Amino acid sequence: MTADSVSPSEAATEDRFEFYWQQQGEWVEEPNQRRGGESGVQRIHEPGGRLLYVKRQVGHTYRSWRYPLGRPTVLRERDALLALSDLSVGVPELVYCAAQQGADKQWRALLVTAALDGFIEIDNWYAAGERQRHGEAVHDRVLETIARNLARMHLGRWQHSCLYAKHVFVRVTGTDDSAVVEVALLDLEKCRQRLTAHKAAAHDMKQLRRHSSWNADDWKKLNYFYEKVFGSAIKGLR
Image: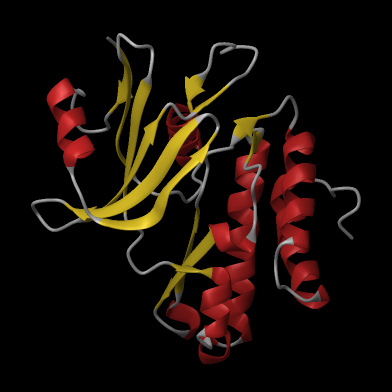
């Protein structure tokens, strides 16, 4: 049996893999068949009460020039979580990740992340009336924080590859000048590094524009904040 694993707090062991593999909870994403295998996400609680999300996969792989025989997709997602965290991009906390290949060459893989307490999908934040409650000054800071996180990701040449508004989460604590705005990006399964920052930026920002509800004025502000950090304009966004 071979294993590829990482744990921020302690060395991964087969016992720990089996512990998370055997845990049962509420399905957040029912197991589905794709990429030649099965993938699903459950919500569980640690003994101490912390809420976790466990992505459990069987035979769910991707292929690339580096991995022509296939590699579990959770390992690519793990790589992205660690890299984006190092770039100060808001992402879920990685708790545990491992992949094991049995004698039958079938992969079993796990990705465990901590819940984003208090964060809400950006469109749901709008639907809940949070923009009106906090006011336009705080809303501008929300757009700026989103833009800064995206620009830092792209400057590191990382492309999200599935950047829809539903994958952008926000948490605002406090009010007015004391409000603290935080942003986290989710669903990094397809995230990868491109040869240049501009290639990553052009793909993601055009995709986000197509799959978000921001009006022209809001998008103009977000793009302005983005370009301040990224350092140049992205052709086709204005």
